[in-house]
Length: 392
Image (cartoon, rainbow, N blue to C red; front, side, top):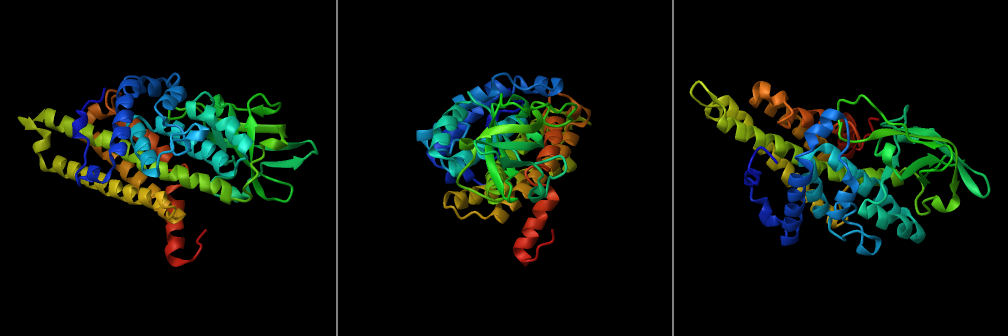
């Protein structure tokens, strides 16, 4: 259970009034699940570098996998604000939990739904929605992170099948995935997506060990040594970087909501602790420096909430630009990591203990500020958008 009462979760500007009744019901449902399933186990999982048992199936049960996918393919047919709310509540538990749902939803289910054949949609999406099948997303490579256009992974047409060779790195869910949506160059140098299934000869998924971040999440590599891919596993409806970048836009949108949850967990813990901790004969919440921190925390959280709500409205209307999504991702992750660090100081030495979430969130957010586009790259995306000049 959380250290603080859930009724102290901030809504300083009455944003709840702007949500529908369905939005609030979804939030409460996921919030309750996080309290019962994630909070009692997450510290041990992070300390022991192990994932939460049956996490994907549990996420499937609460409708957190592909919630905006239409019901005919196993999704819930929800809007983009609902998706954001779900991500926020999951990341209040832990970034690893949100990452698992975000990868499955935005990086695996989204491209299959958006660019896949009808046969692919029917084959994979329902099982991905329940968590019966776990997906991974292969774009980043050992030598190519922020520059995916220089990827080396490639495939050639062998007549009856495609032959895929190369490697992907820093892949969430890789060691446990059943399928991977992999982006590779064809013989003409054009990027296309392929669905690679576990068990295909030459496909390996070694795990990445010794992480100080996202320790409750399985991370690994996708290695392809002349893997034979059936031709029906090629995503037929997209060519070029538009495919993977559109997936990243969906994931970045979810992250911009999710990290608010991490910030809320840190803020609420610091607020509760500051009221209980006595120094010099009175609660530390009565001192100006602590109030300054807490006031700044709730201000930044409120700004991030408003940014995401409007972005969600734009997404619902199909009007959100990649640059707008980049701005929200960059701003909100920076906000969350700074709150995690500063809120740790409110607790003094106790802030480093596993009973409190600050160090775990801060360590996790060091990954989040880098993946799905680094902090600096997102600044350049905004810069290019407002100046019209490419600084890459």
